[in-house]
Image (cartoon, rainbow, N blue to C red; front, side, top):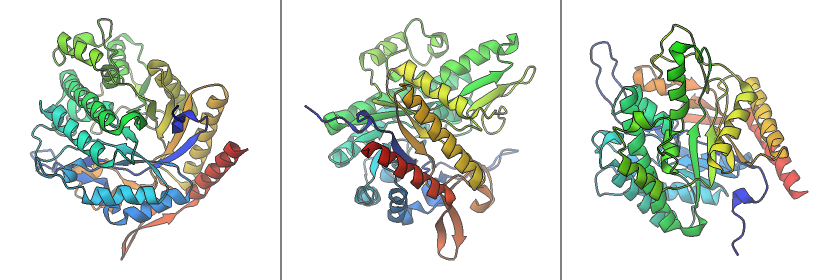
Length: 427
């Protein structure tokens, strides 16, 4: 009889994340459109050089889990050539530090040689091969995987808003990218499961997105319904939940014919844990009567801070929809140390209340371990310091020796929560 997996032992598990967005494609400016730089958060934060120390910082504040991504575009810089040298050293350093990696296999970026990126018809096979090779190399010691981080954000930014490559727009673009992501998701999880075996744990992760305001007004009702349902579209596809009664069936029909919907149902993969990324100041968008918003960074809807109420609703909704334990896989506020500590305390207290009420919440992740740089850096010519987001347990401080990681009081408070929860588990 197998011992319980980590999420089955009855404890609340604390994690941290290191921001790992990779969009390596660049393009020149044209007309009113500014040039776009490639973005690699590991480069911007100097994680490539400082990874071992970063992992020690995470372990030092009491984190057990570390959500951490692999730069696919570097591992596979050319078709058919695989370079695992840096990843080998990083995985070894995480394990040496006593952390349990939860691997973000895909955190936005595709290799530069993959034309049309997520719209490439061969994308699902390429990402499947990448997953298989990762599982073959590390599956004897790395057991936790997120096949695709935030597929709804992938599909919105790359398929509806035209903000990231391949710059598709509209509902058709969203459906096309969502469908191809889902194909790759299923193939990746199956490839990993085949190679890691019964020890594999799959933490599916998506963004919590909700909408309030004038969403019931006639001019907004159809749009609001579409947005609410498409938040879950990729997860619904990969878990075999899209059938003749699905509310988005007509919209996705051009991208996913009936025979392929049957393929998704026949090959469905499930989350062992359903991860929810929730940011209180950004995860709830406001509809305004008479005002059209296309979404995305270029034209965002205003957001509403719903605090712990919004977090409770998101966790409960994902748990009910997918019938799996849930965890907070990303949360924080960008602000002062005092604001961050307040949200850390409030959000952990909310998770503990939900657990006491019987909700299947198994983990909590503060994101990120140290500060990061805003994605708008990609559309700017300004230095990285102009795009710093104060989010972490550690400040990023420019120095003659590069970016220093300087612990702030949020790190102390996180460590205090970790020690308290460990004491409760041992009592």
